[in-house]
Amino acid sequence: MSRLKQRIAQDRLLSNIGWYSLAEGSARVSRIFATIFLARYLSAAELGIAAVAITCFEIVRTFANNGIGPMVIKARATALDATCNTAFRLGWYFCIAMAICQCAAGFVIFMTTGQAEIFPLVACLAAVFLIMPFGLINVYLLMRAGNIRCVAQIATAQMVADNVLTAILAIAGFGPWAIVLPKVLTAPIWLYGVRRGKIWDANPAAGNVPVADFVKFSAPLLGSEILTAARLQLDKVMVGSLLGLEALGVYYFVFNAGIGFSLSLTMALTNSIYPELVRFAGTPYRLLKRYKRALATTVAPISAVIALQALATMLYVPIVFGAKWTAIAPLVGVLCASAITKPFYDSAVQLLRAAGATRYEFAASSILTTISLGSLAAGLHYDLWHGVAALSASLFIVQFALAVWARKVVAGSASRRKLKQSNDFAPAEGLAAA
Image 1 (cartoon, one colour):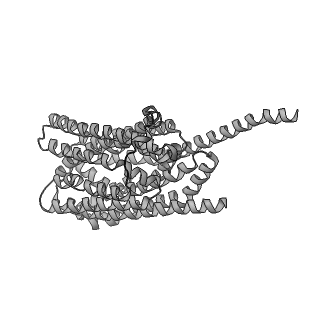
Image 2 (image 1 turned 90 degrees about the horizontal axis):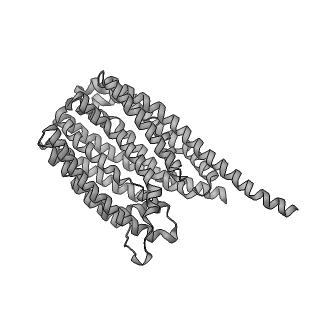
């Protein structure tokens, strides 16, 4: 019976990743469609200006990954209503703060660069954060229930609409606004979808969970997410600062043409594997067994797909995006290759999170962010090619090394727990024998 339950659970994990990957794949096809038009209708400088706004938005949005969602997902059934009540209130605080930060960041960038167009581009994205609180608990509960199919379908609808609008606005001559405006216009699609997918109303009679419980669990996760955002977004800041807006536009294109697809696959893995692993959090041995099986059935195949994409860049970049980007194709391939080991790292991070070892997750993020951004900075002192090569090499090596380390951390914790249980039981045996 136990093996049958494990098989069912594993099938659910495969099914969830399959749905999410299908959704992300559909969205990525539409993203390629949008990128084709962006490459033809926007200059590298315009892409650079849009990249500034989107990068700022992505950095601020990091605070939405504050650990509140995982807290709801792992909450005991008896404490779920109280946990949701507190999570809803904290979600509002975070989203209002993010909206303020987004506007403030736009003003700072405007004062720093003197580009009048940047402030409205950045500030308008604050509207997205004011829409989010109305659907956060709903999407957390959908993920808690394992209804990844619904979450994936909603995300697909929003991203496809975003990309179609981007293409239309690019053709219409909206310039950088073609990339920024659809983010705001499609946010209601997400809100409608999650509220329809899961109805939730606050239950005041259930009370609230102490905020200190959220802080204890979520603080290391928030720190880890901030570092992850730094790794994924500050690279663009560094390229723009050291090499200028035109180089940033090229790098932004390279990122979307290559690693963007890889990130969509790893996002599917991350969003699917945590709700599965957390079910075994109380039994480290079973947790590790589930993780080991996931490596073979999901993580390794995703890495293989990313490797194939890296090999194919020389073929698809000039065909899909136009001959003028042919010289950039090797750069796309190199950056894409850096993501081959990312599924191993991301799944290991979720293993640490499920095991409650969030301080180790923070340590892993700190190491990876420091090494990768340091490598990029060193390479950019020469040119963009050296920067991308240094970044890719460091990511490829360090991600895999940290994945191996994370598994050893959880395995060591499981061994210590087993030894403690054995030691606790031994005196009782001795007394019984006496």
